[in-house]
Image 1 (cartoon, one colour):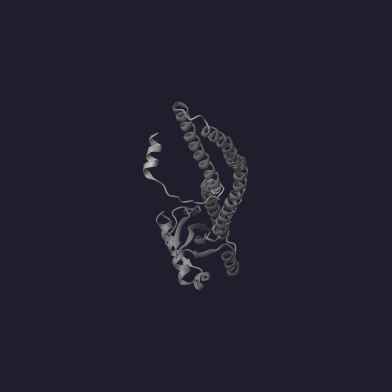
Image 2 (cartoon, rainbow, N blue to C red):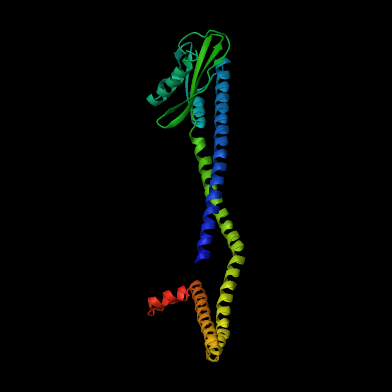
Length: 286
């Protein structure tokens, strides 16, 4: 019973320690991964803005179908205007898309990028991508003002960035649970091997106590029998009485050892018998 409790206690400590260490490591990995993913999303968003801006600045004809395809493949929402007038491409935009694009333009306007006013410089200017949330989803939005030979064009872009971060987090959590389970199983095997010598030593100790207790009863019986037949003069009778009393006390100690051995082996039984209290007190006093 004690061995099982000790084993369970050690395994619990081991698993809790390993789980804590792995959780700390996982938290660091997730944090670094989230930062790397955030940087990757921003770089990808900037690359898309640059590519679309190049087409707008060079006067290349961009079809509506290609813009719709670009939006679908990259989780993008686009709004393009030419000298302050929205292109026909924007006419089919729904209210949700219009609201998100407007939020991106408002964030850019706070940095000095106003899509409704003439640009102050002849170079291309792009606002810093702003992150905002809508209905629990995360978005990146920015405005790019592109000069052309006939004036200027503005590009407002919003990208949904939530989808890419779900599966890596789930994979990390599953890996964490699998790692804790595997290390817990390995730890249990190692603890069993480490406890095996102690268990075997305890078993041998119990066997020795039981065997020694049985063997000691025989010489005690011989001593007690010889003490009973000693000459009955006063001096020797007192000595024989002491010997007999000590033999009985030694017999009780041996009985206690046998009782402990039986308790360890889960084979002991209770035996009730009457006891005179004054006799017990006198024996303890002596």
